[in-house]
Length: 255
Image (cartoon, rainbow, N blue to C red; front, side):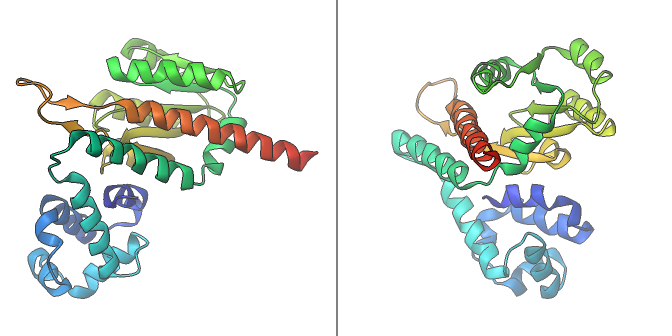
């Protein structure tokens, strides 16, 4: 798990000083990788104890582990000269994190929901929604695709606390998507976000978070940067297979 994901997960436990520390770290990741705890405390104008508490609030043992995470983040984002290896490493990271993740709470939410919805605006999001609908139908789960702003405004008024919605956003900062999710939360609808692996507003709003890395590949075009979105579809497929394993395990216990 990356630092951005930890910040999202424990965001409600962070105070104003913690947010300030994180904003400084996220804006100076390469520099902070080399700073001692006293140096970072000086940069943030806080005590070393405050830095230590910030790390502990993220479930880390101490500042040393925080720097390890920071170093790994920097290694993942540094410029790559071999695009194929870079892309494959990104896929491997996703497969490893998803295979090791305990998704029991997500699957129980699937099974307990009266209605399952999936929302996302944009061409990429539309393709991901279709894949979610297609593949989970094999597991006898029907997701209703919410398409367009007008439809989203209408359907959100019909939702209840017995429903669940997967919300897809590449950036996690789309204004309408954020407002839509807030409306879902007001109605106590269970929510799952699918976003890039970074600190973002949508992930902080949702009950559960799923992350992907979308590597940006240089040198493919003179005018445009190529951003891979294959990870989204890999995530959905792995999530589905884990769900089927979950169903099988539950069925055996009941027998």
